[in-house]
Structures are given as C-alpha cells and as structure tokens.
Length: 398
Ligand code: SF4
Ligand code: SF4
Image (cartoon, rainbow, N blue to C red; front, side, top):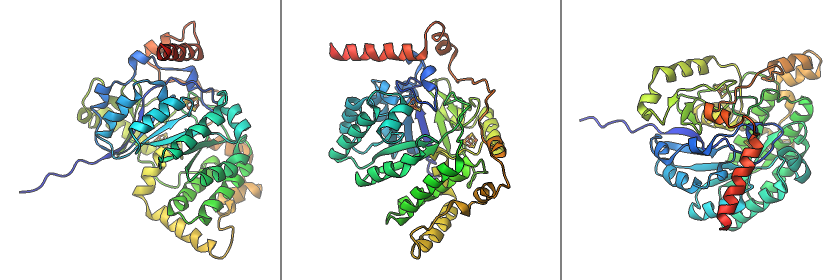
C-alpha cells in the first residue's frame, strides 16, 4: 500500500493589520489603516496551511492587543515565526517574548539615532527600539535583530549599525526602497546609486570576513540589493505564489507585497485554503508572477529562492570566501557590469531611473476595503490610529 505524500509546507507572511503608529518617509501605510473590526480573526488564521516559516507583519503588528492569540494559533501550524515590528510597544513585545521565547523579533531601525528618528518619525524611536532589543537579548532570546531599509539618507549608517548589531550578537537584515500598493508609495528611488552601493560593498566585505556561513549568504543577499538598486533583473527567479503567500488583514491571499496593484488569489474568510489555493484566480495570479517585471529583491521573496536555487548563492559564496583568503576586500561593486557601465558613462542616471519602479505620476490604490476607505472621509489615518492607541492605553490603565 502506498503511503500518502506528506503535506508540502509553505512560506507565509501574515499582515495582521494595516494600522501603524510610525511615520516613515518611505512608506505611507500609516495614512491608510485598516479598521480593527475587519482585521484577520483567529478563526481565519486556523484555516491557514502548514508552514515551515511565518513572518508576522503590518502596519505595526503589536498595535493588535490580541497578537499573542494569533501567535499561539500560528505555532500550531508553523515551524518558525518571526515578527517584524517598529519596536515602539516595548512592554507588549517583552510580554510576548516571555510567552514565546522561541519567536523571532526583527525591529526596524533605519540608522543611527538621528537618522533613524528622522526617517521613522517616532519619538525616541531609536532608543526604544535599541532598548527593546537589548532587553530581549538579556532575557536570553536568540532570534532577535535589526532590520534596516537602506536609502540615500541612511546608507552611511549601514556598517556602523551592522557593527552595533554584531557586538550585541544579533541578526542584521537589510532591504532597500520599494514601491507597491503595500507601502502605499510609488515615488521611492535611490538617487546616488554609487554612494549607496559602496556602503553595501563595505557591509558585504564585513560579512564575508566573518566566520559565520549565515553571514556569507547574507553577503550574497546584499550583493543582490546592489543589482536591484541599479534596476537590473533579479539574480534568482521569483516564485512567489507557488510555495509562498501573503495574507492581508482582510483575509485576501496575495502572491507578495511588491506588486503595484493588489493581486488577489482568493479570500480565506470565505473560502477554505484548498479551494483558494487551487482556484482559477490563484492560477491567474501565478501567470502574472511568471511575467512580473518588478525585479523586487526583498527577503520575503529572496529567502525562499535562495533555498530553492541554493547552488547559485553557494557558488558566489565559495568564490568570494576563496578571494578573502588573499585580500581584505574580497568584493567590489565593479564585479557588477552595470556599476562599471555607469562609472564609465556608458549608462546615464536617467536610463537607470527608468529601470526602477519609481513612477511620479502613479495613482496608488492602497488596497483598503471600502469600509476602511470610508473612515478616511473627514479624518486622517494618523488621527484614527492615534485615537485608537490612546483608547487602548486608557483601557490598559483602568
Ligand atoms: S514602514 Fe512599517 S513602520 Fe514604517 S510606516 Fe510603513 S508599516 Fe509603519
Ligand atoms: S518580482 Fe516577485 S515579489 Fe516582486 S512584485 Fe513581482 S511577483 Fe511580487
């Protein structure tokens, strides 16, 4: 008798809310919050498939006071959970970490103190984030770290921030500017590409000099970010929606968070996972993914690809580790033909700008439900979320 095939585990990102208390310069999600009444319930989360990895994100996920219930439910179906947060709600983060010491926490810090606070727009944002990370480390949590979105303004802080994370024994995750409905933004662009690339080059060399294989592969990821900011085709195929998915606060299942418009495979509030995943709508989205030209290089789409096409990053690592035996600078941005072409005047800044997803004339559909859009008539997203948090704090004090 044949044994039934084990269920294939997926890589999932759960966007638990579009509410956010930060005011980041590269993301307008804080202006377009979801209504709490419409956000994913534990009942819908119960319908998700088995996962080998789950990222919980937002908005700011810790705005949801029922986040521990969500994490508890997700642990029944996921081998590993990492929560991305802006680190503002220290008490909530620490309380959750006490209940789930195995959970991963990534706090977005956008540079050293002044730069971070200017980009993120949170009062004392750097100190709060840093202190939260330090507290988590002191509690003995292993899977904690920084996340930084690199742009012109904070690129010089890249290596100094990496050094801080390294001294604290923490993970250091990087990204660069992206445009999509998810970020409610279409105008993000890197202006001084060589300057930003050189800061990445320094980081890559620091990572390659380390003795940690995980950091060597992270060096490859950062090499891919240089390629991305020069608007070049991805170094690895994008297979989002095949064995990965995103689910938004309304239960809509999407391939990723990089598309210009929201792409929906189905809705988990009204469908079962099997129906949704095997539906004609899901297939249509997969066809679009196959033709997608946005060339994103975000950890959510690259990490599964690096596992799937491991020989390519592995070969890059072997080559550069071998070089590091003979030189202190095993990596140079000029390994990338496009960096050489730009340096040599064969390609202009205007041509590179055209390769990016920046679109100054784009009208952005923020992906909100009609009811969430309606609450923005007469009130700003900031006012709505501020009132929401004030009420939560008030209830907490009673
Ligand atoms: S990047 Fe994150 S923290 Fe910043 S506004 Fe957007 S959702 Fe909020
Ligand atoms: S490249 Fe991949 S992650 Fe980016 S928008 Fe296209 S399908 Fe999504």
